[in-house]
Each structure stands twice: as C-alpha cells, then as structure tokens.
Image 1 (tube, helix red, strand yellow):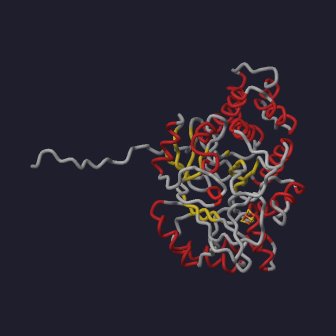
Image 2 (cartoon, helix red, strand yellow; image 1 turned 180 degrees about the vertical axis):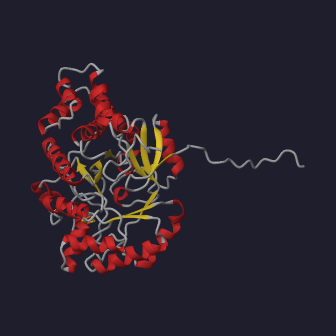
Image 3 (tube, rainbow, N blue to C red; image 1 turned 90 degrees about the vertical axis):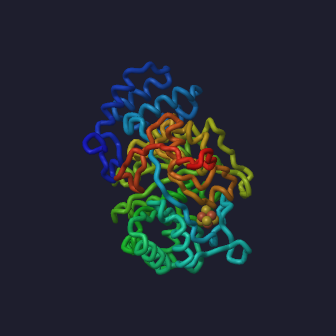
Length: 405
Ligand code: SF4
C-alpha cells in the first residue's frame, strides 16, 4: 500500500504527498469562529503559525473547534490511518549520576534496587520478546562507568543476534554522557553507535528547551542547544530521530510554544525529526512540588496545538504509556496519528505514577485504534513500511465437549 499516493521515504514518513492541497480544500469548506478563521487561512495557504498564534490557540475557549482544526490537518496528511508498532522497552540501567527533579526512575549506585544489566542480561531480556517485536527501545540512567565501548558492545551483540530488530536507543543526554566519558565529540560518538547497529534515536530528555527552566528541573542535563545539536549530528549521519516535550512542570505556555518552534526549525534543516511526543509531568513519587499539573483539557489542547504548529514534523504521538488509553483514544481525534507500540514493560513512566496497561499485544493496540474510529496501520520504527492491521480477535478455545465422537 501507499505505493503512489503515499510517500514512504524517511523524510515524508507515510504522509500523503499532496496533503497541503487536501488541507486547503477541507479548511475552506468549513465555517470557523472569528478567532480561528485567520489561523485556518494561514494553515490553508501553507503559512507557518507563529508563537503568538499558538498562544491564541491555547487561550481559545472552544476546545472542540481546536480539535476539529487539528483533526483536519491530521486527516489531510494521513487520512483515517493511525500508526503503531510492535516493540519492547528495555531500560538497561537505573543508575544515574544526575538527579532530575521530575525523575522517579533514577537510583544511586548504592541503593538496594539499583541495577545495571550486563550485555548477556540485556540479550536475555530481548530473547523473551524477540519473536513478537520489530523494535527495541532502550533508554536508561547515566551510568558513571559505561562509556562508548560498553554501548558499542551492547548494540553490536544485539544486532548480530537479531538483525531484523530495529534498535532505537539513547537519548541526547546519554549520547552527551558517553561522549564526555569517552573523550570524543557528539558526531564521533554517534558514528560509532551507528556502525555498531544503532538505527534511530528516541526523543527523550528534551523536557522544555529553555535553559533557565532546565537549571531548575534537570540541572546538569544537556543544554537546549546541545539537545538540538546532538539530533542535528545524528541527522547528518543518516540517523532519524524523534523529539519530546515534558509539560506541566514550571513552564509557561509561551515556553511550550518556543520549544515547538525550536524543534520545527531543526526539522526544517533535514526532515529527519519524524515524530513529536508531548507528555505531561506525572506527579507521584517525584520531587517537584511546584509543578502545575496538566489537566486532560490541557493534554488534548497541547496535542492539537502540536499538530498545528509542527508543520515540518510529520507524526504526533499520543503516548498512551503516559496519558493512559482513554485520553490516548481521544487524542487521536485531536490531531495525533500514532499510539507508539506494544511496549510490554516500562519503568520510567510507571514509577512516576502512570497506570496504563503493559503487556499489550498487537491485537489490543489495533483494537484500541479501531475502537477510536480509525484504521490501524502497523509501521516499522522509521515510518517507511506500513501494513494495514486486521483486528481479528484471538481464537477462543472451547473446552466444553458435549458430544464425544
Ligand atoms: S531523567 Fe534521566 S538523566 Fe535525569 S535523573 Fe532520570 S535517568 Fe538521570
């Protein structure tokens, strides 16, 4: 599918090639409120929304109208399709030299429940899921002793055993940490990881790309510019990546929009930022009492505004691990087109208070998409292969035998 009308290059990542034309038609066929009309006109004509437009959208009292606008943009790009993949999360260590104030996952080396997987232990984790997955998503703490050599060995061993499983691993701050420990620059670090078998970078660790805020919520992490530079260097080496936003800590609405603006400008350079994953800060077990926790209204609004602001990033994810299945279903009507993957095990969000179900198989995920009213499409990590997913219920085993033949 998607052979002619749908582009499957890394850059277009499954978008309809004529999506802007479709959008123009659908936006001009609707009546909009006086507040939304000028914004709809900009979108119809392919004019990028400004940060001020984003503020207007955040303040607009008609959430449904905002959702309709975002949904039209999503439909123009992807029609009724919603993407997911079959993956597992393996967090290789929870030992971390930093102590970000929102993080419930990290441990110091001396804590009882600190762990650090050997390469063999990591491969054994993969073994448990390998038959059912096409991606392993690995992020973890900044281990004080693991430099580039450890990760090259880990990735190379995993790739040699499972060449068909895509490795999406290491957030920007982990890349920076390896680079510092190994005394090599970002580009060389990424080059060695790529040569070992790294396929793509996840987007974690962006939080809010504002250094004053980062100083308070994640002191010691990479700076905003370093986050962007690490992704830029990855793109130059042909490694696609995702990007994220952690909202609902101490940032303002303008900070969120400036964050989106920085990301879309980076995406303009290479079109290799494939997916934006906005997720709210979860309060439990954390150390940020001044956080202004996001409401469901705000989560849906943020997803819709992401869709409208991020014209150069094709996919917007409803990250169900964090926002839960119910809000994720709704988010698909507010501009999101992806629900991530089966995940199967997850610590970072769940230690912070997430309640979303783990151990989802492709059937449950496809059903979630279908129940929300969309066509489930199973994709690969980098959005270049797509298959329509048939939601067939698992076969029931009838145990009651009435007639013996
Ligand atoms: S968010 Fe990452 S870098 Fe920060 S403390 Fe947690 S594990 Fe460490």
